Length: 315
Length: 315
Image (cartoon, rainbow over all chains, first blue to last red):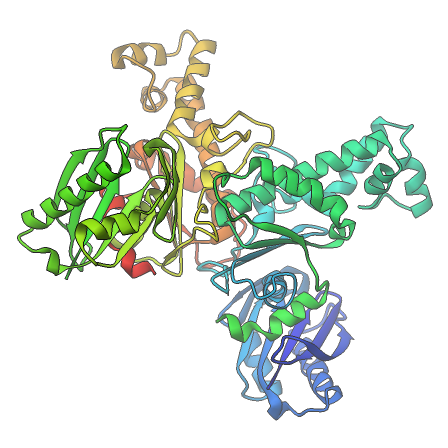
């Protein structure tokens, strides 16, 4: 049997047929083209789903379930609120069944889908106790315990990017001050880089940013690789912030594996080696023989689609 | 059927017979009398267990399982490390069975037992998604998800007192800086009170501390009740720190109920009302209809014993 995984994003709608070994057979894609009515978006979700099925050389009768990953809060098949899609209490499960037939439908927050995908089919290698952290525009996270997604009574849980690590610290987009996201996101790293550049007009980072056309999440890392002292400082301070939140998660959950994804994870061991050192020095479980492994996410954008496709396994 | 719950503390060993409705029938108690050999401690655990059974008017054949709550890290019936008992890899499950017969034995960290007790038999009223926070000498926590204790792969999880809320902040007993415990424990409140008293020799807190014989966790609260401006400031700042950690937990777990126990919880609504206000203003789940309830722990010292006695339900 096969399942369909759908990634409903602010930019694109992607559907994929996934087999029992959690492998993608075929994909289909269309722009989300916001702003649009929910009905039109769901028409397109159905269209790309059917397209992916057709490209896979199977029929809808071979599909045993459909999973949809969406931004926002999902409760019992209803997308309660998704800001960047303009959704407010959209009966997504019913809308999918109307268009694709009476097949079991599972709907989940997209970050949670990505965590499930990585846990079962990516770097987690089937791990049942797993946390995925995404260092991107914000800091996303998804928590898997006993093979199930942790989202709490209102399905709004797993928001560890909005864990305060500096009381009364930098303002966060969520309204709190001092959230992990305000220190450990790619956006935060770019701000930290710009602040350091202002203070150090002689840093090589000015040159690198000019070449690149902008200050990016790579600027400080690139400067560090060229032995720029300010670059080294920015990267070290940034990784320390990442480690503060990661250690908090380790102390609370002691997962088997914690993976780091998002743009910044492309730095690979340059990021992970010092991160592991900080966490090792600071975690509470110093007497345990078994410790959380900190690894790089493997599936990239496919994590969310595969995770959506295999939501049936995590019920 | 009945079960036995045992609370192995640094000061006392308490055993209780608990019925199917999670109610304590009878208790027996003996001093832990540290330092002693583990064998002697387990002899006494067996002795008080049998005593509690006898006082309950039943026999060991009426006991369907035994649960033991202990400080430290427990892994598969072995107490891996418990600093204040001097335990290092003690085969507690086997030692209990040798002394009490071949009855199913469950062993867990004491804070986790207390959380389970409150969740099932106390303020949680059977809640399956529950967090217990204890504001005492330190900040303890126990997390219940889907009716089970969350302790991770190495059974050292649930240590949310050692979540950093102020990067590079006040030193914590665990070696990190800026842990929640260093700001929100009763010990931290006493320190915050003393610091404020030093700065404000005119505060009524000097008088209150003299009457009381020492600065305690109540001093600032009592001063606030007498309209002392410095007392008001200390209490408000303290509750804000408590709220920072509570909000972090709510954002990560969105539990049904989060309860506050420990000495400070005796302040009741004086603590809880402003705490709820801070959490409400700061939590991430602003669009959800369902929100975490923040309540006072109900069972006091019995929480750990009842939790140990009902570990069989949480497997």
